[in-house]
Amino acid sequence: MEIQSALTSISTAIGIAKTVSDINKEVDASNYKLQMADLRSTLADAKISLSEIREEILAKDQEIKRLKSFDIDAKKLAQHLNHYYKKNKGGDAIGMPYCPHCLEAKNGLFTLHYGKGGELYCGSCKNLYSEAQEMLT
Ligand SMILES: [Zn+2]
Image (tube, rainbow, N blue to C red):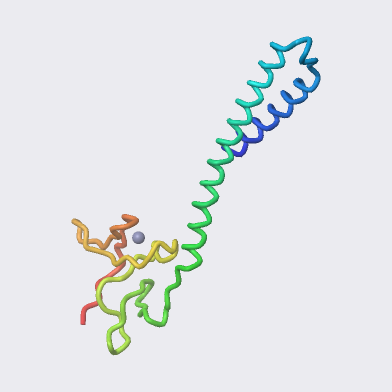
């Protein structure tokens, strides 16, 4: 977990900073330089961890935005049993049903296809729907 890594680095850096502040740098110059190098390295680690956290947060923000903007107008779809379909001019279900899992997960409108066993499946999530049926005109 990058957050734990960043917190650990920052805690270590605080400890090193305390050690540095206790060193009499005129008397113990080599220890002072060593501690300062350690401090810079630890702070660099914390910076890397925070950059990775920032990237993860941005990716999650984009996913939240996508999920919020995914909106299906149910009035434009026809329902038959537990599946949604396109509507024909008469308002009845027609063609292949949309994948209910992908609709629920807000992945998109994916029409089901016939698999090798004749069952309908989703090309996106690969779920099989043995009860689903194609609606013919
Ligand atoms: Zn699906």
